[in-house]
Amino acid sequence: MTQTVPTPFSVAPYLKEIGRGKDGARGLPRERARELMSAILAGTMSDLALGAVLIALRMKGEEATEIAGFLDAIAPVLRRVPRAQGPADPGWVVIPSYNGARSIANLVPLLAMLLAREGTPVLIHGQPSEPEAGRHRVTSEEIFRELGVPGCATPEDAAQRRRDGLPAVLTLESVCPPLARLIELRRALGVRNVGHTLAKLICPVEGPSLLITSYTHPHFRDMKAELFAITGEHAMAMRATDGESVVNARRPQSVERWFRGAHTTVLPGESIARADLELPALDAAATTQWTREVLDGVIPVPTAIRAQADAITAAVRDAAAACVAPRA
Image 1 (cartoon, rainbow, N blue to C red):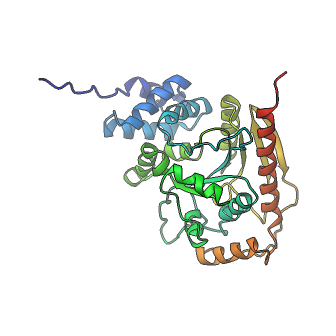
Image 2 (cartoon, one colour; image 1 turned 120 degrees about the horizontal axis):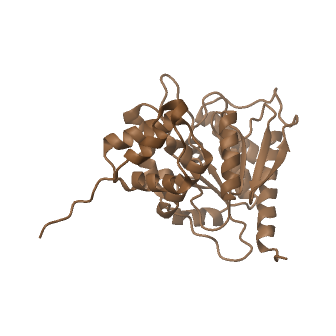
């Protein structure tokens, strides 16, 4: 009996749109973007074609409608944390953490621990960042491990962390292996690809969620604003601190929120940060010890971190109330 060999996915029609150079390239419509990313995640294109697509997308730049289509393709292969039972479930706060600290102490774990112990379920997902020459990024996972909060082996394990009042820490590999493999291609290509942006936009949970995201350049802020208007995603965004989605405790900055397509500013960027704030040394051990002392009340919670935590809690409660309120 003759075995049928699957026909490789043809990228030529897509490259004709995305691969025409900086000035001639066009973003894909949402459905065609979904088709292309589905083929990438399924591994049905050659290595040569995949490399060409990723470099073309990088040269063209990221567009909201196209990213929405890519996320549509990821949704069916995403392994999700089960939803807690009951109508009062506020859903998860999802904080992607992929960069790690390189110039200021990593306060993502502090933010997550504050939220979790106050009753807001928190999910952190990430992947070890590529080492830089002569520089080590201190990842959130390292600090959580030293705090006694080990990573979850599977999304199902996150429910126990929630019951224990602790953040659930998951690797990208455990929630979306195809996307993790896409990010790993940086080792071969030498540059980041669209997978890095997509990883920071996924919410691997069932039911409602609040995505805490960030941006490094105004273009990415505008792209995400358009994306959340398209998708109706419940999200908060701010300028990144070392690439992480936590406010800078020393520099005032605004935090914006999107809910069902509507946009508000939840922290106006006034002087809630302190330029003279004493923070720990950059390394994981020093940051962990300082974080413990803050959680134990020995050191006051930095004003900016407290304000971000309060804004997140209020947004979760507001969204939960809106979801259960009767419609007119």
